[in-house]
Length: 294
Image 1 (cartoon, rainbow, N blue to C red):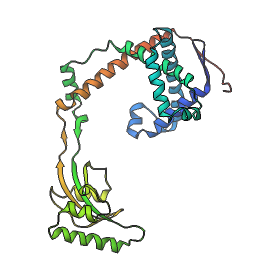
Image 2 (image 1 turned 45 degrees about the vertical axis):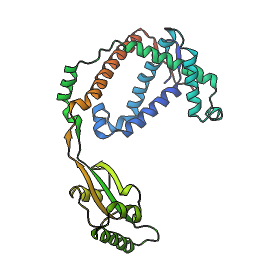
Image 3 (image 1 turned 30 degrees about the vertical axis):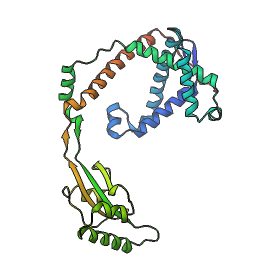
Image 4 (image 1 turned 30 degrees about the horizontal axis):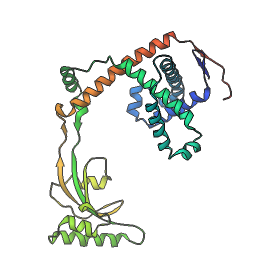
């Protein structure tokens, strides 16, 4: 359904576009995230339509307020923004293919910069959190700063693929394992003979859930410096070596202090902006119109 916000027509197509974007975002959420937002699986579409209406109204109100208050932004800032848009589209030809022209982009960039300036002004009063607030947040939410156990492993692999049978791949992996047992360096064998050569087979640090299950069962089950036997995954036959291990732990406050500070400050800025938009909403004239062809 189309809207009028302070006499400005907001077409149904814009509302539908916002609703579809929200619906897709809802689809990507985990079940736990949906529960946190109170999103029932059977009502994702209707909820997206409701939220889209509110989002669009707020966007229009902010734009109207930004254009009504304050001076236009400087030409240099606008032209810089236009240049960035043109570059993202691969040049003027790409811009034209997208159905845009520089005058339209220039107007949109100018409006966006004025909205950003308004938001900055409305949120500038947000008070930075004090150290004791940061420390209190850390104590209450220590579980959020818990890191998982990780291992750094290297591997040698012989793929089972077109033209290579399972027996041939296993035999090749066993031969490489014999070379390791004879004293050859893992890194050298990996670079010379693995089907995934380079960097000595080093895969870096990773936690559980990042690799296929069979590979993780092996590398998380052996000690630092230990080399596995030959084992099978969906990719073929592997030999793995654990290079290092980091236990699960809670990151110290000094490491996450900046992250906490930003989160709390962003929350305060968001609340200030919400209050400002609420005041705009209270003073606004919002009319629901019958659907019209766009």
